[in-house]
Length: 435
View 1 (cartoon, rainbow, N blue to C red):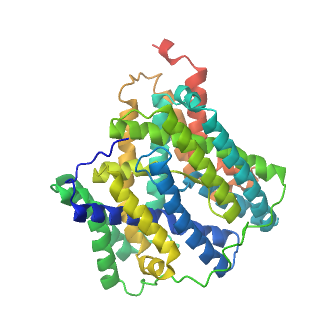
View 2: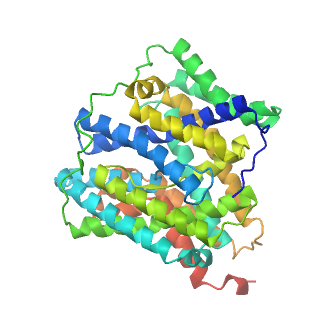
View 3: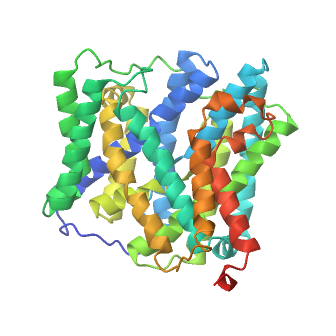
């Protein structure tokens, strides 16, 4: 794939600044994941610290592998949100049932490795055409709609201070909304590079303003001395619990849809066809990264669909800044002092900037359905899966305690239920006959 961009060719300073913009984007998306997993499994601080370093280093490696060997596009490859949510859900339900978290962790590790092998085989056998038939515009639009809502909800909670408090922090919320307004204003009305670097400007302004206005909230993240890098399966000794393993492998299959939808969206964004070879190599890299995640106690990897929103916001499509951002992110893991410095970034400010980037996913959803004609009958193919998925997202997690544990993680995930329902409706009803 040829590098395409709208930044001045050879402008080294501009490319470096764009690289730092990618660095912040990757960092804010990744830093919370190993911490939350460590809390869910009650892991010691030394192992959490090791997981953070591993996540930083391997995320950088995975991004570079995809951009050079896999799909060869500037799309972030990181801990997948679908996997993250399911693992946290399984840990919460297992603990509430009084069962062993170590047994769960060991079974998850085995399940993740099997899922990685399955994803590699899927790529090697060239089965990407299956999703080309399954993912019609209405199914793709459902995915984008629900993903946009799921992610913006997550970051909105961080913006208003609910990450660290059960109540809204009004002062933090006002500053976050101010940063959102700043980024959107620069992006919509700024000219040239000011518009391109709106997210980076928002992060810097937010970081400075937060440090000045709320020094009491500024608690820099501190990494403990990690344990040995040779530690394998930190979530628990490998265990064959077939119930847990089946759930994890099923999630691995569903996660394949994320790769397809992301690359399909990239095809429209870059105005370049994605070849079968790119799909094949992308699946192989994702599968390999998933196996690595299972062995070293990381949330399995996948291409970030939200990268499309980030690229639509910045309109910098070159791979060069992406390489710089991924390389710098690896350094954060290799040099803990650098990680500690960037970890002092207030996550509420990072959430505010990501909130603006993920709004673009809504545009991707609209792009997917604009070619479809809807009548009062046809609207159900979108309305039913989207609104049911949103309804499930609104149900508090404890309310699912009456649901059997082996299907609870699936029903709790409105995104997964919505996608499955959209596929069933799309391919079981002849909508073209519903005039």
